[in-house]
Length: 475
Image (tube, rainbow, N blue to C red; front, side, top):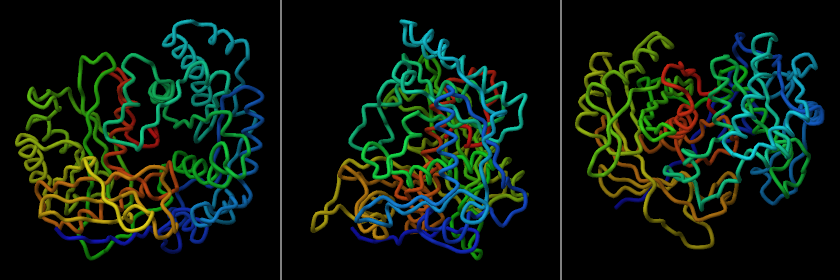
């Protein structure tokens, strides 16, 4: 057994590099600020009651200026917000005008809340928001639409999540086969309109400088503004630092999801084009279940066609095939899957291949003192089996930001043309490519996190509905 430590991966921004998304944007501007083809005036449509729309307008105005940090002993974990304006950082500004908002009538909300059956109540709420989102998407010029849930409505259509000790790949909160999930159902319903939405609770619009009840104001602004910026532009605010002397890489994450009636199991694939983080979502075909371990798997033909489509999209985007392909999966690869992936890679002239399985590890490590292992701790058991701490004590933050003992990832390298050290370093880097959260110590690489989030929303689409290919419609 060998013990290694992977340094915190750097991120590239408009004018420099940094390990932290927040500090990087504040000091060096968003990465795509160097491009002309981006929106510097972001038109924010909104749907909500008159009261919640007024609160949103106050928050948007507040976010246009710097917001002081939370009083904390970890200033790098809770930094100030630079402000969302054209002078610094995001180099863009929000525009929330009355003509691109839609008022919900309180009597309509009261009517929904009187519905006794939960699923019917949620579906009625989805219908209500859909009508207004559709109007804005088809009759107004908007870049992103915010859907605000009043606390009264939220209490009536949403159920509080039972938060587990830590996020897992097999998360019990995702089991919504019998309960309609408002967030996922609405995202699926409006997807064909072609405008991303952001769902926000009314309580998230309230100020809480010290973050006693929720996130502090600066952290809230960082996360909300970054998500809205990405959804509006569909270009990345930061990217991984790349080595121009190394071959171009295409990362692919494969995940499975079950239809809501449990009758059909499909596969969802999230492809991250390269270190830029540009992604495309593809929906696969119904798959079978292994009778011995009850795990879904692809036939050789399904694996071939799925990966071939992904590589075709890569080539369309970058006008070249990748030199190296990395496939992440949260279950074991079958011989049929490997055969199909090999054939598709060969037909697309991809020379270097890495097939990697990523699990939640069954055990945890401890180090001397009161903190868990450092993020980036890499334990090499043998050439194929590795342990990687993507969550843990963070040197930059000078603390462990989590609430529970972190669970490492078990990395199994099935086949590889690259060294285990590089593969694990890439996985750690890909945990930082989540534009929904600017705290950079994510647990899962975006390849698997995206594949799972896509499946949660895609199960609400009917088979004949064409899903959007951009991650911004699912996050």
